[in-house]
Length: 102
Image 1 (cartoon, rainbow, N blue to C red):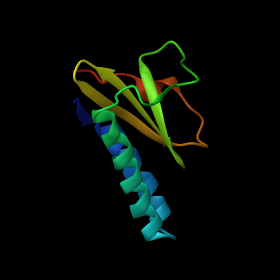
Image 2: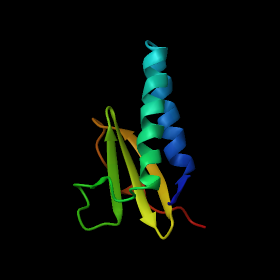
Image 3: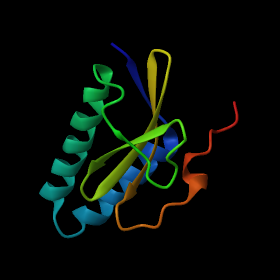
């Protein structure tokens, strides 16, 4: 079993998406966050569950899609790093997935 590590950018973006949805539909925002965390938690047993990122087919990054979100992560050793969450309709930028400096 692997450990899930959420990065600050991933949590901040998920929070921003949920806040926006909650403006009109608070229950829908809560359900989305629950679905995202449930899907990510499955990675503890199946870290390669997600698909390759189509824009970066040769990269170490994978993605889960929990509409309306794309959840980007990388698997290293016994850890899964959730590096970014974005709305599906947003244009992907490779900079979203850059590793933060230690």
